[in-house]
Length: 63
Image 1 (cartoon, rainbow, N blue to C red):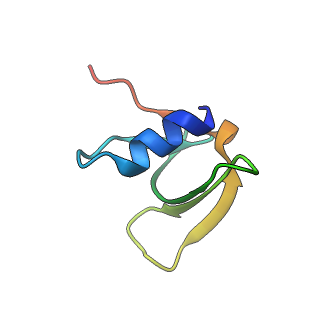
Image 2 (cartoon, rainbow, N blue to C red):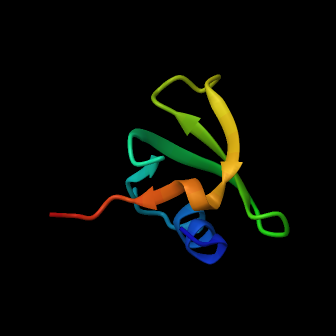
């Protein structure tokens, strides 16, 4: 995913499914546009957050 799409998802009022490394579902909590990083919540625990490159995020295609 690129930084622009990560920002679009973060700012969207709709729920858009995103995965980290193609596996774990995540919620985007913050996007650092300058450094191309995003802070994400992994799973349903608010304390389980990671800061990762937006390159590791992928939007889940709707069927």
